Length: 551
Image (cartoon, rainbow, N blue to C red; front, top):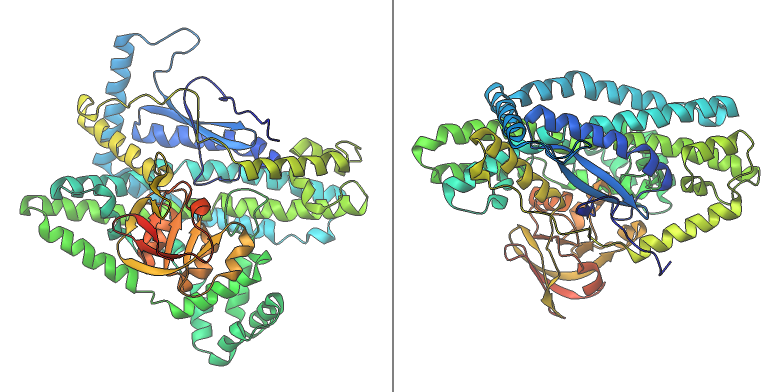
């Protein structure tokens, strides 16, 4: 595949989403996901008056590229007239002003907490509770269709909350930074501990950890060694709360956004690690630290701005958990449920000789899977095996970060009406906090430079995580170096001395866990996994954003 070419999926500039999908999409997810996600972006931008119509998705050789779509992009009838542009900016400024005046995030959180999240959780458990092995082929096909529809719905649900999850926290950080004359990225420490779903002990995990803490004999089962699957079965039998935890999140992906990623139930070592971490972590430390940090900021803010400081902080903290919950309780669960159904299909197709391995079902689109289930002879097992090999090679080679011409400079915020400037400033800053990274690798042979996300200096041994299974070799006190991190890494949090990533910025998962747990973090380095090797001795300076090889 060395001759793979990367052409832009359309006119204009495109950026690869390395933070969420560093390995690209499988063919089925290419088909199911983008349209629903784009629809969600359209709705969330419209609700806030953002000067973008949506975030367009494009797939190139399996890799996800994104492009912001300004409202004034020329259409079939040509460009908008200046007076039309002015009128639309005025209208959107009014929407933005109303959003801040009415504090629409209160309605958003009420809708999420009282309706959409519980409905999604109920549907997840309903679909995940189906006895797949007990279904005949017709019933399994019907169930598979339901899983396709569920993933589309959950992709839309995730992305329709994007702006509401981003704007209030970013708006607080920008205001506080302006009052203090500091980098707004440093303000995000005020949110540590305010997103329980992304903490070491999630709401679903807490009852299991509490039960183990009250039963020392059962807790000793976690670390007695032996086969992880057998150990977890024994723990589930001894502690009903652990069994309930697996029932409630077993279908959720441990990392990533694709049916190719493993689910929690498939990773007994991850579950055991989470339980051990939960027993060792101080659950109140992160929030206490963030409260102390917020108080120190407030004390330095001028008296006339403190009331607004308090108001913005309260609102931002109230919505902050939506950043993680909208994925965990939406598409990360729907992906896992679809994965289980596909693996059942793959097992049946393997038994018929239609595929050589159950996971080759991930190399098909929906019509092809349904066709093979109905007796079609295409695609063949050999074709699917070749597809799997080709996709693995593309993942190994990677993809360029940018396609097309350089992105244009955004309009100066001071030229926009104030409410719109406030919205656009927060959106731009928030997106950069998730997708941003160094523009190019920096440092030298013995120094890797990235984005500083949590201060402190730590010296230790590097452990590069290239594949999922590398997590299980991680030793206490090592420096975790990975392309990016996700929920799976939470099982190792109690062991980490410092964290370094290739991708992501100051509100990436790695940045959040570094702040939550108080260890140094440097993210967005681009090529730390290539320049550092397992066994290297390094010094991680989380304030300077530097990783220095010392042996």
